[in-house]
Length: 167
Image (cartoon, rainbow, N blue to C red):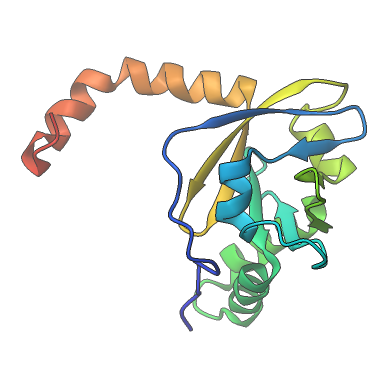
């Protein structure tokens, strides 16, 4: 079963988008990220639904509900990689929850997930990355760690990727 990872026609915006988590645990999607994740805001229509979770305990994922239901079914039905599927689904259910995007582009991050990601208190910085039909959210700390590791390996990475024509 293939997952329709692009429920809307929006092309993934380029680069990271910064944001904050407020004291009520709400993230605010930048306009381009909202359009990518759930489409444009349509007056009079119900708030679009998302599933917000973590599959790795490091990053937050925002999936359109329709995409998440397909992923959930794949994980539940998996036989060949049953252990990995079961553990991934355990993390998703532990940290996850359904949410909606309100007219101000805000969405609620479940308390257990905010605590795990250390996004408690007002004004915690987050960074949004759009690709493959979903949104990945990084904490400031995690993004800094990943950037540091990437910079430390940049020369070797560029040599490795030169055969692809990347310079």
